[in-house]
Image: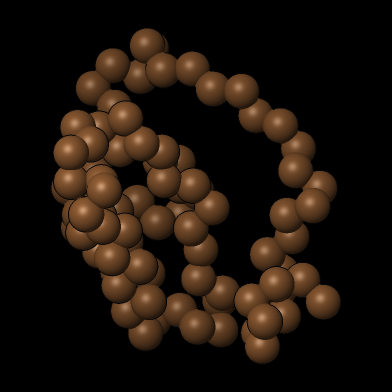
Length: 86
């Protein structure tokens, strides 16, 4: 099982196919070819992931999660030049 996490495209770069390219590149990665199940969570990219055959869980009552606040992760503060916070 694998979990796809922290995938995002900055709003100014959206609409250029970067999200599709990124997801396709991840799914085609050779070490992942033997993985039977890949899970993810998304707030607003459901249609993107559906293009790659992701679907809602068939038994959501069996899924659990633990959410922690990650103060160090601030995508809005990413530097375009370095891809990291200033």
